[in-house]
Image (tube, rainbow, N blue to C red; front, side, top):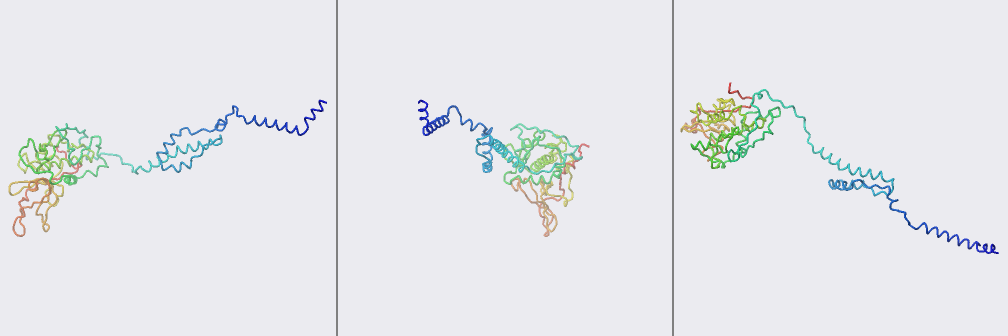
Amino acid sequence: MADKGMITLLKPPRIIIFCLFLALLCTASRLHPGTYNYNEVAFADFAPPESPSAEISLLKEIPEEDARIEQLTLPAPTTAAAKPAVEETAMLLRQAPTDKKKTAARQALPVTKPKPPVTIPPALKEQAPIQNEQQPVQNEQPPLSDSPLQEQSPEEQKPPGPAQERHDKELNSYVLELIQTYQPGSYPYLLNNDYANYNGVTTNIFFQGRLLARAHPSGNQASHCVGITFEVFFRAMQERNRQLGLSPDDFNGMNWDELFDFMLLWYVATGPKQTSNLAVAVEKYGLGSRITNLEEARAGDFIDFSRTNGTGHTAVLIDWVRENGRIVGIHYWSSQNSTNGIAFNVEYFNILDPTGRPYGNVMPEPLHIARVLPVAGYRNFRE
C-alpha cells in the first residue's frame, strides 16, 4: 500500500511541479555574487599608457596637433585583444610632437655655403701679432666706446683672410662713413694753447692703454681742425683693423711714442709746415703717400692748406669746386670757427676769376694732401 501511495504522489502533475522547484533553486544559486569579482575579470588585460601626463604636456606644447591627435586616440579597451592598439596609439602620440619640432627646426636653419679656409695674405704676414687690448680704468682713462664706432673685444678679432680681404681698402671709405656720425651743432669749435689739458679732440683718445690726446675737460666735445682730423684718422684706422681681424692698436707696428710723434707732425708741432704736416706723417710711418696731382685727389683724402692771411686749415677733402672745369675751390669737412664747429664747408683759391678778382684767399701752393693706403700697401718704416 505504501508503494502504491508513493506512486500516487509521483503522478505526472506533481512530478512536473517538483522539477520546477528544483530548477528555481539552481537559478537562485547562480545569481548570488559570492566572491566573484567582475571588475578584475573585465579589466585584467587592459594596461593604460605608461605616462599619460607626458602626453598631455606634449599636446599643450603643440596645440595645432590637437585635431590630428584626437583622431588617433581610441576608447579604452576592455579586453586583451585591444592592448596592441593602445600601445600603438601611445607611440604615435609621443612621436608626433617630436617630429613636428624636428621639422620646424630644419625649416629654421639657414642655408649656408661652406666657408673657405682662412689664410693670411703674404702682404699681411709681417704685421705685428694680435694683442689683447688693455681696458683703461673708468673715469681715469675712458675708452673710445662712447664714440660712434664701437670697439670689438679681443675674442671677436680674427686673423685676416679671404673673407676679410674686401675690407682691406684705402682708408677713404672708412673716413667718409665716420664723418657722417658727427652731427653739426653738437661739436663746437675751440682753439687755444692749453695743450696740457686739451688737444682739439671730442673724446679722449687712448692707444695701447695710454692716453694719447685729451678732450676738453669740461666735456663740451669741442674741437679744432688738426684735432678732429686726427681723431677721424685714428678711429677710421681702428675700425678698418677690426674689419680685418687685426688689433685696433696695430698702426703698422707703431708703438705709443711713434704714434705720438706721428700726431705731432699732423698737428704741425715739430717745425715749419713744409717739414711738419699730415702728408709727412703718413709717409714717414709707411701708412700711405702724398698726392701731388690735384686731379688724382679723392674724397676722403686728408688735406692741409694755407691762406694769404697767414692762417691755415686741416680738413677731409670732399671734392674740388670747379668753374668751367677749372678747380677754383675746396669742398671739405672739418671743424672751423666760421661754422661754429664741425661741419661741411667751402673755401676758394686766391686765383683770379674772369673779372680779374680772386675767388678767395686759399693759396694753391703749397697743398699737402695725404692718402692712407690699404694695410697690404704699408711700407716698413724701420728699414
